[in-house]
Image (cartoon, rainbow, N blue to C red; front, side):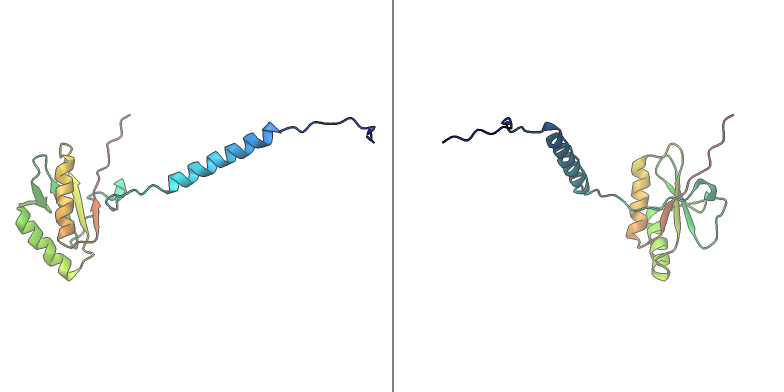
Length: 139
């Protein structure tokens, strides 16, 4: 015997809106996870603010200036790379946190700056910063 229900029979439906919400949530989750999986490497340096450039020079620190030809001067006097390495190595033995500021002229190449930075790091100096100059305001 067949029993007939007074309620109309409903067919099953798939709701699309909750499916779309779930798919967007999964997409956002995978994007966030993939961004955290990137391994970036670089050189650790500390850059001073522009107001501390050259005007606060103290005798217990070294300022290396690299010219456009890649030549280095230590506190205003020209020095050869082997002599500079020996000087910095001696300072690093006495104090590995001896502060060294590297500044370059406007025409100095990036390669020359990195070479001097590598020389300073190989000498054992731990505290290295790039010195910057304050730009003249244009009115």
